[in-house]
Length: 122
Length: 187
Image (cartoon, chains in turn orange, red):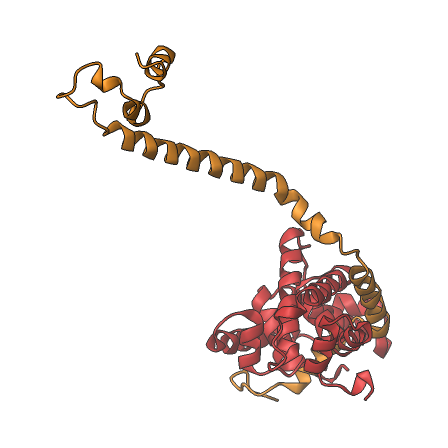
């Protein structure tokens, strides 16, 4: 009899366990598994989509949230940069400040009257 | 070369490429081990077979991750062990009361085969009452002949833990089977 401290295989215990745990007819089991494997392998390639489909909606939502966040961040950066633009040259008169270049550097939407006035030479 | 003559690693590569015969040969080769391992922790034989099948199919799906330079058996059995363990967790495992030898003898009658059958039932009951990891460790070591290192790989525990599990499992099984005269002669 093998000692319980012996870490060599206990063949008597092993044989008894094998007899107790054997389910029998491994060939029938193997045939069953092979059949299931055939079905698995025969699945159409479209199954990729069936795997990805559940992720499509959360993925789209995540992409939209990301785009919105990036837009907001870029908008804030642009607004922040413009906020530091000069209000106007204090040495220029009011008329001089209405020159064409000012239309391009101003933050505000240009007034239609100012555009017309500038175009018509005031 | 016939499919059945090929090594496990070659068969795994062929199976990964869609060769059904190669996969079938691997299933034939490891069906017994996988079923016994699953049955060591799942009382119901049908449950054990379902777990073993789940393990094989999961292995087939993930054959691309198998390294052909390493032994196939431990890789496969780790998947089967996980499948059986998951199934055991999902199921409410039936409580099993140890079968008394005199009761079994009264039920089984005097025939030798009936006594053997009772001994196997008692041993299955004793295995079922073992902690899950101990049951798998002792079956892999004493029945399937794997070494401590391979079993450590299969069960995902250190080698020392495997040695301890095998020792404790053997001791518990011997104690449980002590009332049965001649249980070691049962084949």
